[in-house]
Length: 120
Image (tube, rainbow, N blue to C red; front, side, top):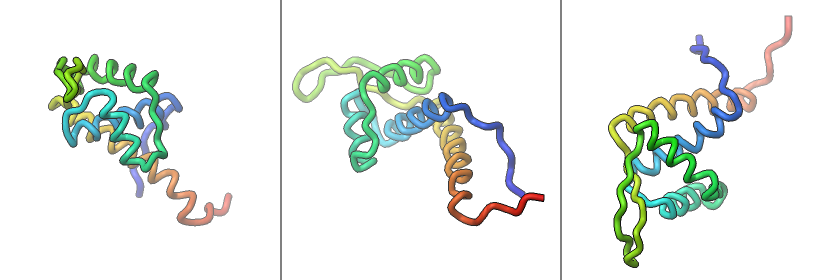
């Protein structure tokens, strides 16, 4: 029998998905904001287009939660950039976010797997 979870609100789903993507991207290595936008675009084959108006508030939210940290560094072209990295707490939160995503994607996949049960 499948384990039941509390339903996710639309905002939780959207923020949780972006959080998951950011945390996973930082799991692969430290990145500045523009680098995160590039990896999201590349890994999604251009399907996900996150704008800076969504990315930077998410980064600040994740930093405030203690899931990521950032330091100022010089880029390859000598510009100051904030480079973000995953914290140990962020690695734990990544596991939580992945679980939420698996719950959501499994629920949606059920619609494609079999016809609905007959109503009693």
